[in-house]
Amino acid sequence: MSGKRLFIYCAGGLGRDVLKMARYINRQQGRWEEVFFIDDHFTSGEMNNAPVIRFEKYLKQRNNHTDEFVIANGEAVYRKQIYQKLKESGCVFTNIVHPNVYLDEYDFIQDGAIITEGNVLGGNIHIGKCTYVSLACILGHDVVLEDFVTLSHDVNLSGSVHIGEGTYIGTGAVIRDEVTVGKNCIIGMGSLVTRDIPDNVVAYGSPCRVVRENTDGIVFR
Image (cartoon, rainbow, N blue to C red; front, side, top):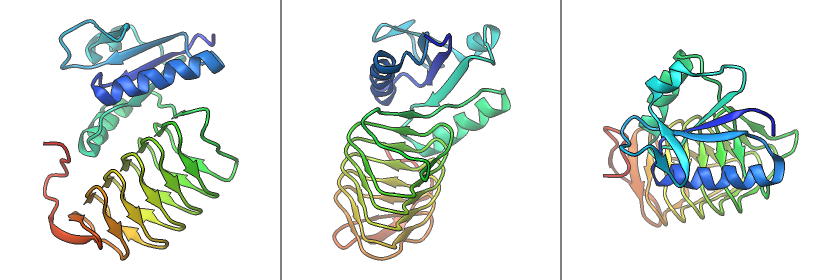
């Protein structure tokens, strides 16, 4: 083991998924000595046999040289807020990529990204910080996912698709090649996106159409 500790911020459903993946990675690579949750709203001291602590308590016993963070919150709005808090506190982010996802030196993955099992990535992919790619997505060549993007499972992005910061793409959505989806958008599950989508909107359907403004960025209500 490396002596490093992994801290997964948020102990909800997504956090438990990330914990499971981290444990699998540890069995393959021995990457972290211990794995913790940080959650300021959780009432128990343990989740799935992993300790849960509050951020205030963490700050009293931190180790800047060996501690690594990822944020496991499905809402991009909250993920960005947590990211800013952690950066201001000097926390260090890491990437978690499932071992069956192939990356090479021509792919660019920024800190805090989480890429789960079964994803197929084409060449020259760019994935921004604290972006989350769920199960079994397909990303064509030259896809760009900006910071804090969320791809639900089974999303299919053709070549040269560009997804703006903070945008959420719902389960099973398909986006045609060379389409740009703006920042802070919500694309509904199963949508077929064949043309560009502007910033700050909710859009869905086949073909996908804008239905309203995205005023607060909250996906799960």
